[in-house]
Length: 226
Image 1 (cartoon, rainbow, N blue to C red):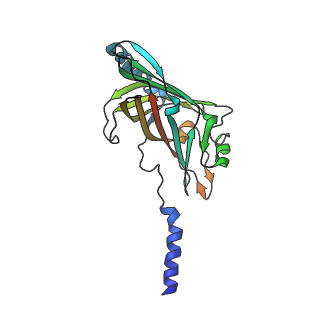
Image 2: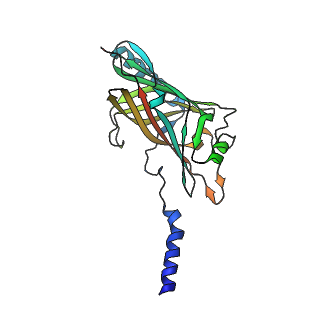
Image 3: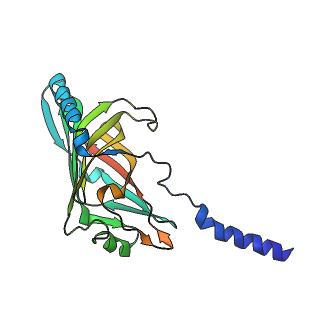
């Protein structure tokens, strides 16, 4: 009886790592395509919004109350990280948000593992000496929640994400809220790192997963008063 109990306990310990669930698993995936496939349609949508909504003004992100985080995963565990240095802006047409852009200093990344920080900056991953910046510039911001969007979604944001020297068109759900401090825009979505040529596999017994979770939490000044 004691022998059976010991075997059962050891089995649970061995199975625990394999059964742990990654934070990435339930996050929605961004729609990704080559930029040339959608640029004309997106540019037209942005122009129409500007003409219909009034004069355009631009405001800078409130960086001390904003964050850009990410989660990567190996077979055995998740790794949480963030970028400390970034800039961003929002463009209002009248009082309506219509365009969002941000630029990230990739070398400012920090994770929960100092050794991993150094490795991520090498040519195996971001190659920060060659590609020091990542940028996103939206081409359309569409009100509404497409089918299958997470609860609370208010907009679909589409734009060009340049990372690791590769441009891709991405679309992802966004939650925007008007607060006393300004306009808060948040989103969580996954991208496949291979789409941007980041394809290091990891160790044979601890492979790196393809998807990376992006967490955006941006606070912008309120739109100008009517």
